[in-house]
Amino acid sequence: MKSDAAEYLDKKLWKEITLPQTYEELLLALSKDELQDISRHYGFRNISSLKKKDLVHYLVQQLPCRITQELKLMDEHRYLFLKQFVSEDNKVFQAVLADNYDHKLVNYWRKTGLVLSGSSQGQKVLFMPSELQDVFQTLEHDAALQSKLKQNTEWLGLTYGMLYYYGAMGHMTILSKLEELTGVRPDYQEFHTILLRGGEYYDAPRRDSYGYWAHQNVPDVDALLKEQRARVDVDYYRFSKSKLLKAGAPDYFDDTPAFQRLHDYFSTHYQMTEKEAKDLAAECQHIVNQINEPSAIFDLLKTTIEFPNVESVQHLADVIMFFWNNTRQWALKGHSPAELGTGANPGLSSQPKNLHIPFDTDLPFATPAVRPAPSGQTLGSSHSKSSNPTVIDLKTRQKIGRNDPCPCGSGKKFKHCCGGL
Image: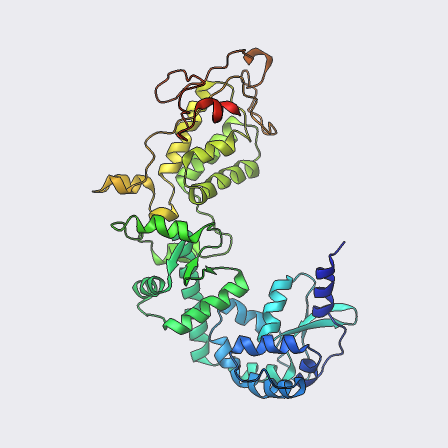
């Protein structure tokens, strides 16, 4: 059942309309707030006092003149989206069925005033007013526009790729990197608008209150920037142009040898499907950047899988450390700890020295939905019960007492930390 807000949005976006209508008639059907949203999108000023009819008249006069400028802030994907509304036959009015379109994208296009929405003959449709179609048709063979769209597409792809590996960057830094990669430095204000428009459409990148751009999965931009600034001698890892464009594609995932090794460990040692193993390894990769503590990976895994014995924990610890040391990290500006650890200043590597994992033979790890392949006893079985559970520091191989410091490195006593799980 839809919420009141969802029902209200549905009614606003999909009002019953008769097509075709003039641009003026279509705009008059919008609310004053919606008309002002269009005005703000284009930066029109000193029009807030206009009455609705006068505002509509103003927009009808101005928007056809602004199409070229608006298109020059887009990429090829959005241009092709608009192109589907323009018929080669001027006598045919084209509308596109919109059942599968996200409300956010519909709102984006409505705010441009280039594409409107409604219900016609019982179907949800998107359409471009005829007056705008005529202008759009004249631009199809505009070589300068097509070149600009191609350039914007490349700039956005490279920026998204950089943020995929670096996490967050300042606007000036992005401009400098784009100049290095393409030989052309984007105009500061124009590219700022291009990124803002891209953020509205693709929901990426995000911009913080200080003007930094960030990957949409960065949980704390300030904390990440602080970590990066602590490594003043570490420059951004130099990726090739093709690598960044590949990383800038939607839903890209960096399937590295380290990732594949972790994935193979899950699929080999546990009864997981290919998708389950990949999803679990991907979640571990997210933890590398979002929590930045290797022990956090183990915290996730001990609630997801079971361990037959101490040796299996040590084996997993080795796999995790290889994965951690060879995964590119936002805090390291796209480097992996292993790469920086071989440099002249290993102190900048942030490479964890050891991963201390508590192993409690009496601990029935939670969520045993994904169990290891039958090859011996598992934790929590009747054969592994003990009135005095043993915990071993995998580095020292020494037993841990309840009042000893917890080997996870928290600084707490073991009984108040991992021993209390």
